[in-house]
Length: 387
Image 1: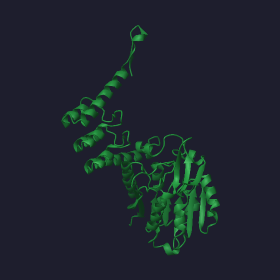
Image 2: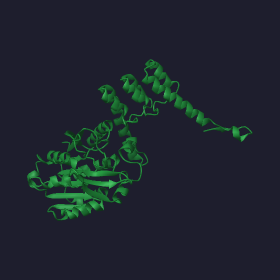
Image 3: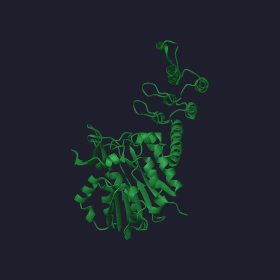
Image 4: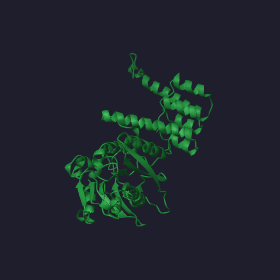
């Protein structure tokens, strides 16, 4: 910013304000020119390349030039804007990305261009963050709260009381209060179908099932998946549960989980035990599952890196609760692909199942904030790649 004045202080002029106004005007003109389809594509490109119109700019309702190009189903312009500063995950006032617009118009080519830009961005930012702890993915900031509430900070979550309850339909709810007026579900009973299908896919045809599987689960919540593990035709020979929240641990004591044969509960975060003798002495697990609250994708990616040491061998299987970006179909799709690519890097191939979780007539959310709004849950089953 440069500020000039003459001898009279009242005549100071802030040139940065003028520059910002010019950028805003150019950005607004770019969005409306595309929305109204007023100019040939070469003229639009010139506004960006020659006149400096910002491809990232959003007008008052959140519409960006990329949204506008998606509305017009202009594949060439979508590609150009992504190459020249358009933000793939910018959302409008209805929380739609440009890819969501393309998807609503059944334009697969535009959708794939924007989604693939998101995948490349997330892979690059994950690589950068592994080299520099100060870098963080813009999408990660969408996926977790950026404040210090229990929804966005593990330390705040562990220090905040949880509430176990049932709604008027009998649905089990474990929730955490994030403000004076809002609660977020840590786990809710509607997830039972997901958990049952997950255990079936992980265990039903496992070659070691009749010997008693060695199972590691990170995060207890309502204990839904652990109940299904315990209900296997042959009970697990080792069932290790890592749980850090004191209220969950107390709930587990009330349900007598500490007395169950073959069950070992490790009180703390998974990071406290990941290289401990308590885990490594098992000799590898047949099944590993993780479902933590208030951790972002960066933490999950770190957990991925420990899987080769946790899994017993090629017959072992891994899964996680895939709620990454699950309030937006584009974000969900991006993280489906990103997680698959990251696991492939360490020799674990994912197979995806689908579970229809469309809302029934009853209000499954009760008074809690929605954390899953896409129709189909994508169920990941990871297996170690054969040599």
